[in-house]
Amino acid sequence: MSAGPDRSALVECVANVSEGQRSEVIARIAHAVREVAGAYLLDLHSDAAHNRSVYTVAGPASAVAEAGFALTKAAIREIDMRQHRGVHPRIGAVDVLPFVPLVGADMELCVELAHEVGHRIGDELETPVYFYGEAALRPERRRLVDVRRGEYEGLADLIGSDPARTPDAGPASLSAAGAVAVGARRPLIAFNVHLRTDDLGVARAVARAVRASNGGLPGVQALGLGTARPGIAQVSMNLVDLEATPLHVVVARMRTEAARYDVELAESELVGLTPAGAVLAAAAAALGLSALGPLQVLELALAEAQAATSPQR
Image: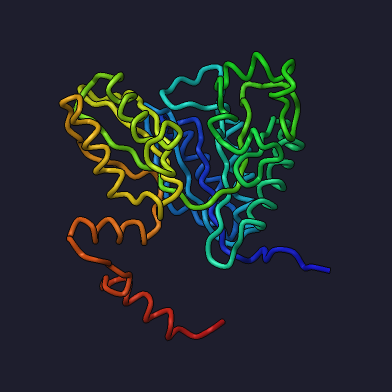
Protein backbone atom coordinates (compact mmCIF):
# COMPACT_ATOMS: atom_id res chain seq x y z
CA MET A 1 0.00 0.00 0.00
CA SER A 2 1.33 3.44 -0.95
CA ALA A 3 2.35 5.73 1.90
CA GLY A 4 0.96 8.76 0.08
CA PRO A 5 2.59 12.14 -0.47
CA ASP A 6 5.32 13.31 1.88
CA ARG A 7 3.71 15.81 4.26
CA SER A 8 7.11 17.22 5.23
CA ALA A 9 7.76 18.40 1.65
CA LEU A 10 7.81 22.15 1.13
CA VAL A 11 4.79 23.88 -0.37
CA GLU A 12 3.54 27.43 -0.81
CA CYS A 13 0.09 28.90 -0.24
CA VAL A 14 -0.69 32.26 -1.86
CA ALA A 15 -3.88 33.49 -0.20
CA ASN A 16 -5.72 36.41 -1.83
CA VAL A 17 -7.80 38.17 0.82
CA SER A 18 -10.46 40.79 0.11
CA GLU A 19 -9.03 43.51 2.35
CA GLY A 20 -6.40 46.02 1.31
CA GLN A 21 -7.37 49.16 3.21
CA ARG A 22 -7.79 48.45 6.93
CA SER A 23 -4.25 47.91 8.23
CA GLU A 24 -5.40 46.56 11.57
CA VAL A 25 -7.46 43.82 9.90
CA ILE A 26 -4.60 42.93 7.54
CA ALA A 27 -2.28 42.65 10.55
CA ARG A 28 -4.65 40.41 12.54
CA ILE A 29 -4.97 38.01 9.62
CA ALA A 30 -1.17 37.92 9.33
CA HIS A 31 -0.95 37.19 13.05
CA ALA A 32 -3.17 34.13 12.58
CA VAL A 33 -0.62 32.75 10.10
CA ARG A 34 2.37 33.52 12.31
CA GLU A 35 0.75 31.61 15.17
CA VAL A 36 1.09 28.34 13.21
CA ALA A 37 4.37 26.59 14.04
CA GLY A 38 6.45 25.74 10.98
CA ALA A 39 4.62 28.04 8.59
CA TYR A 40 6.46 31.14 7.37
CA LEU A 41 4.75 34.30 6.14
CA LEU A 42 7.30 35.29 3.50
CA ASP A 43 5.49 38.25 1.97
CA LEU A 44 2.42 40.43 2.45
CA HIS A 45 1.32 42.72 -0.39
CA SER A 46 -1.68 45.03 0.02
CA ASP A 47 -3.36 47.24 -2.58
CA ALA A 48 -5.94 49.80 -1.49
CA ALA A 49 -7.52 50.27 -4.94
CA HIS A 50 -7.90 46.52 -5.40
CA ASN A 51 -8.95 46.34 -1.71
CA ARG A 52 -6.98 43.10 -1.62
CA SER A 53 -3.99 41.60 0.16
CA VAL A 54 -1.83 38.68 -0.93
CA TYR A 55 -0.26 36.56 1.82
CA THR A 56 2.58 34.26 0.69
CA VAL A 57 3.07 31.39 3.12
CA ALA A 58 5.58 28.54 2.78
CA GLY A 59 6.89 25.62 4.79
CA PRO A 60 6.23 21.90 5.30
CA ALA A 61 2.91 20.79 3.82
CA SER A 62 1.13 20.05 7.10
CA ALA A 63 2.05 23.43 8.59
CA VAL A 64 1.04 25.35 5.45
CA ALA A 65 -2.30 23.55 5.33
CA GLU A 66 -2.97 24.57 8.94
CA ALA A 67 -1.90 28.14 8.20
CA GLY A 68 -4.21 28.33 5.19
CA PHE A 69 -7.13 27.26 7.34
CA ALA A 70 -6.19 29.66 10.18
CA LEU A 71 -5.90 32.56 7.72
CA THR A 72 -9.31 31.75 6.24
CA LYS A 73 -10.92 31.53 9.68
CA ALA A 74 -9.48 34.94 10.65
CA ALA A 75 -10.52 36.59 7.37
CA ILE A 76 -14.07 35.25 7.59
CA ARG A 77 -14.33 36.71 11.08
CA GLU A 78 -13.08 40.12 9.94
CA ILE A 79 -14.53 40.79 6.47
CA ASP A 80 -18.11 41.51 5.41
CA MET A 81 -18.38 41.14 1.64
CA ARG A 82 -21.64 43.10 1.60
CA GLN A 83 -19.52 46.18 2.38
CA HIS A 84 -16.54 45.31 0.19
CA ARG A 85 -15.66 47.49 -2.80
CA GLY A 86 -12.56 47.13 -4.97
CA VAL A 87 -11.54 47.00 -8.61
CA HIS A 88 -10.37 43.36 -8.56
CA PRO A 89 -12.88 40.52 -9.12
CA ARG A 90 -13.64 38.49 -5.96
CA ILE A 91 -16.14 36.00 -4.52
CA GLY A 92 -15.35 36.05 -0.82
CA ALA A 93 -13.35 37.24 2.16
CA VAL A 94 -10.67 34.79 1.08
CA ASP A 95 -11.10 34.93 -2.66
CA VAL A 96 -8.43 32.41 -3.67
CA LEU A 97 -6.45 29.85 -1.64
CA PRO A 98 -4.04 27.95 -3.92
CA PHE A 99 -1.41 25.39 -2.86
CA VAL A 100 1.80 25.28 -4.93
CA PRO A 101 4.51 22.57 -4.89
CA LEU A 102 8.02 23.60 -3.88
CA VAL A 103 11.06 21.51 -2.85
CA GLY A 104 10.28 17.81 -2.62
CA ALA A 105 6.56 18.31 -3.28
CA ASP A 106 4.45 17.27 -6.24
CA MET A 107 1.04 18.25 -7.53
CA GLU A 108 -0.59 15.19 -5.96
CA LEU A 109 0.32 16.55 -2.52
CA CYS A 110 -1.06 20.02 -3.30
CA VAL A 111 -4.33 18.59 -4.60
CA GLU A 112 -4.60 16.57 -1.38
CA LEU A 113 -4.00 19.70 0.70
CA ALA A 114 -6.54 21.72 -1.29
CA HIS A 115 -9.26 19.10 -0.78
CA GLU A 116 -8.41 18.65 2.89
CA VAL A 117 -8.42 22.37 3.70
CA GLY A 118 -11.39 23.05 1.44
CA HIS A 119 -13.55 20.48 3.22
CA ARG A 120 -12.49 21.88 6.59
CA ILE A 121 -13.52 25.36 5.47
CA GLY A 122 -16.85 24.02 4.26
CA ASP A 123 -17.58 21.91 7.34
CA GLU A 124 -16.06 23.90 10.21
CA LEU A 125 -16.49 27.46 8.91
CA GLU A 126 -19.76 26.78 7.04
CA THR A 127 -18.47 28.56 3.97
CA PRO A 128 -18.99 27.44 0.34
CA VAL A 129 -15.86 26.16 -1.41
CA TYR A 130 -15.12 25.70 -5.11
CA PHE A 131 -12.12 23.57 -6.09
CA TYR A 132 -10.20 24.93 -9.09
CA GLY A 133 -7.00 24.35 -11.04
CA GLU A 134 -5.49 20.90 -10.59
CA ALA A 135 -7.83 20.35 -7.62
CA ALA A 136 -11.00 20.90 -9.69
CA LEU A 137 -13.63 18.17 -9.44
CA ARG A 138 -15.48 19.44 -12.52
CA PRO A 139 -13.75 20.41 -15.80
CA GLU A 140 -15.67 23.68 -16.04
CA ARG A 141 -14.10 24.78 -12.75
CA ARG A 142 -10.45 24.39 -13.71
CA ARG A 143 -10.14 28.06 -14.68
CA LEU A 144 -10.37 30.59 -11.87
CA VAL A 145 -12.08 33.13 -14.13
CA ASP A 146 -15.00 30.72 -14.56
CA VAL A 147 -15.31 30.04 -10.84
CA ARG A 148 -15.25 33.77 -10.13
CA ARG A 149 -17.73 34.79 -12.84
CA GLY A 150 -20.39 37.15 -11.49
CA GLU A 151 -18.30 37.84 -8.37
CA TYR A 152 -19.79 37.84 -4.88
CA GLU A 153 -22.96 39.65 -5.90
CA GLY A 154 -23.73 37.34 -8.82
CA LEU A 155 -22.96 34.23 -6.78
CA ALA A 156 -25.31 35.40 -4.04
CA ASP A 157 -28.16 35.38 -6.56
CA LEU A 158 -27.42 31.93 -8.02
CA ILE A 159 -25.75 29.66 -5.46
CA GLY A 160 -28.97 28.19 -4.10
CA SER A 161 -30.87 27.95 -7.37
CA ASP A 162 -28.45 27.20 -10.23
CA PRO A 163 -26.97 23.67 -10.14
CA ALA A 164 -23.93 24.98 -12.05
CA ARG A 165 -23.07 27.12 -9.01
CA THR A 166 -23.50 24.41 -6.36
CA PRO A 167 -20.32 24.41 -4.27
CA ASP A 168 -17.96 21.43 -4.01
CA ALA A 169 -17.90 21.69 -0.22
CA GLY A 170 -19.84 23.62 2.38
CA PRO A 171 -23.37 25.00 2.26
CA ALA A 172 -25.19 26.05 -0.91
CA SER A 173 -25.87 29.46 0.60
CA LEU A 174 -23.81 32.60 0.95
CA SER A 175 -23.08 34.46 4.17
CA ALA A 176 -21.35 37.82 4.54
CA ALA A 177 -18.01 36.02 4.10
CA GLY A 178 -18.87 34.82 0.59
CA ALA A 179 -17.17 31.75 -0.89
CA VAL A 180 -13.58 30.53 -1.31
CA ALA A 181 -11.87 29.15 -4.42
CA VAL A 182 -9.39 26.55 -3.14
CA GLY A 183 -6.98 25.05 -5.62
CA ALA A 184 -3.65 23.56 -6.58
CA ARG A 185 -1.45 25.02 -9.30
CA ARG A 186 2.08 25.46 -10.57
CA PRO A 187 4.11 28.54 -9.58
CA LEU A 188 3.04 31.74 -11.32
CA ILE A 189 4.01 35.40 -11.22
CA ALA A 190 1.41 38.02 -10.35
CA PHE A 191 2.66 41.02 -12.28
CA ASN A 192 1.10 44.43 -12.86
CA VAL A 193 2.16 47.00 -15.44
CA HIS A 194 1.04 50.61 -15.06
CA LEU A 195 0.19 52.72 -18.10
CA ARG A 196 0.56 56.48 -18.30
CA THR A 197 -3.12 57.08 -19.03
CA ASP A 198 -6.34 57.32 -17.08
CA ASP A 199 -8.27 55.84 -20.02
CA LEU A 200 -9.55 52.50 -18.73
CA GLY A 201 -10.49 51.55 -22.28
CA VAL A 202 -6.80 51.59 -23.25
CA ALA A 203 -5.86 49.36 -20.31
CA ARG A 204 -8.59 46.90 -21.26
CA ALA A 205 -7.54 46.91 -24.91
CA VAL A 206 -3.90 46.23 -24.01
CA ALA A 207 -4.95 43.46 -21.61
CA ARG A 208 -7.08 41.91 -24.34
CA ALA A 209 -4.15 42.00 -26.77
CA VAL A 210 -1.69 40.22 -24.45
CA ARG A 211 -3.87 37.58 -22.77
CA ALA A 212 -3.79 34.03 -24.05
CA SER A 213 -7.56 33.56 -24.22
CA ASN A 214 -7.77 36.29 -26.88
CA GLY A 215 -4.86 34.94 -28.94
CA GLY A 216 -2.14 36.92 -27.17
CA LEU A 217 0.82 35.52 -25.26
CA PRO A 218 0.74 31.88 -24.06
CA GLY A 219 0.16 31.53 -20.33
CA VAL A 220 -0.82 35.17 -19.78
CA GLN A 221 -4.01 36.10 -17.97
CA ALA A 222 -4.73 39.85 -17.97
CA LEU A 223 -7.29 42.41 -16.86
CA GLY A 224 -7.39 46.15 -17.45
CA LEU A 225 -8.13 47.93 -14.17
CA GLY A 226 -8.25 51.44 -12.80
CA THR A 227 -6.00 52.69 -9.99
CA ALA A 228 -6.24 55.34 -7.30
CA ARG A 229 -3.42 57.30 -8.95
CA PRO A 230 -4.30 60.19 -11.28
CA GLY A 231 -3.30 59.54 -14.89
CA ILE A 232 -2.46 55.86 -14.31
CA ALA A 233 -4.32 52.72 -15.40
CA GLN A 234 -3.14 49.16 -14.84
CA VAL A 235 -2.91 45.85 -16.61
CA SER A 236 -3.04 43.20 -13.89
CA MET A 237 -1.60 39.85 -14.98
CA ASN A 238 -0.95 36.30 -13.89
CA LEU A 239 1.89 34.67 -15.82
CA VAL A 240 1.22 30.95 -15.55
CA ASP A 241 3.74 29.55 -18.07
CA LEU A 242 7.09 31.27 -17.59
CA GLU A 243 8.87 29.02 -20.08
CA ALA A 244 6.44 29.93 -22.85
CA THR A 245 6.30 33.63 -21.98
CA PRO A 246 9.10 35.07 -19.78
CA LEU A 247 8.75 38.37 -17.93
CA HIS A 248 10.76 40.43 -20.40
CA VAL A 249 8.65 39.18 -23.32
CA VAL A 250 5.50 40.34 -21.53
CA VAL A 251 6.93 43.81 -20.91
CA ALA A 252 8.11 44.18 -24.51
CA ARG A 253 4.69 43.20 -25.87
CA MET A 254 2.97 45.53 -23.41
CA ARG A 255 5.13 48.42 -24.62
CA THR A 256 4.25 47.67 -28.25
CA GLU A 257 0.52 47.41 -27.57
CA ALA A 258 0.41 50.57 -25.44
CA ALA A 259 2.26 52.50 -28.16
CA ARG A 260 -0.66 51.85 -30.53
CA TYR A 261 -2.61 54.30 -28.34
CA ASP A 262 0.34 56.70 -27.88
CA VAL A 263 0.63 55.56 -24.27
CA GLU A 264 3.90 54.85 -22.45
CA LEU A 265 4.52 52.32 -19.71
CA ALA A 266 5.08 53.57 -16.18
CA GLU A 267 6.57 51.25 -13.54
CA SER A 268 5.80 47.57 -13.10
CA GLU A 269 4.82 45.84 -9.88
CA LEU A 270 5.37 42.34 -8.52
CA VAL A 271 2.61 41.01 -6.30
CA GLY A 272 4.06 38.51 -3.86
CA LEU A 273 7.19 36.53 -4.67
CA THR A 274 8.71 35.36 -7.94
CA PRO A 275 10.95 32.39 -8.81
CA ALA A 276 14.63 33.38 -9.06
CA GLY A 277 14.91 31.84 -12.52
CA ALA A 278 12.31 34.25 -13.92
CA VAL A 279 14.20 37.28 -12.63
CA LEU A 280 17.55 35.95 -13.88
CA ALA A 281 16.10 35.34 -17.34
CA ALA A 282 14.72 38.89 -17.46
CA ALA A 283 18.05 40.31 -16.30
CA ALA A 284 19.91 38.29 -18.93
CA ALA A 285 17.64 39.67 -21.65
CA ALA A 286 18.10 43.25 -20.42
CA LEU A 287 21.88 42.85 -20.30
CA GLY A 288 22.20 41.07 -23.64
CA LEU A 289 23.50 37.87 -22.04
CA SER A 290 22.78 34.50 -23.59
CA ALA A 291 22.03 33.20 -20.08
CA LEU A 292 22.45 34.16 -16.44
CA GLY A 293 22.62 31.32 -13.94
CA PRO A 294 22.20 31.53 -10.15
CA LEU A 295 25.87 30.67 -9.58
CA GLN A 296 26.83 33.83 -11.49
CA VAL A 297 25.13 35.93 -8.79
CA LEU A 298 27.37 36.49 -5.76
CA GLU A 299 24.80 36.07 -3.01
CA LEU A 300 23.14 33.06 -4.63
CA ALA A 301 26.47 31.37 -5.21
CA LEU A 302 27.41 31.96 -1.57
CA ALA A 303 24.10 30.54 -0.36
CA GLU A 304 24.64 27.46 -2.52
CA ALA A 305 28.14 26.96 -1.12
CA GLN A 306 26.91 27.35 2.44
CA ALA A 307 24.10 24.85 1.88
CA ALA A 308 26.52 22.34 0.38
CA THR A 309 28.87 22.49 3.38
CA SER A 310 26.32 22.72 6.21
CA PRO A 311 25.94 19.63 8.42
CA GLN A 312 23.09 17.31 7.46
CA ARG A 313 20.36 17.00 10.07
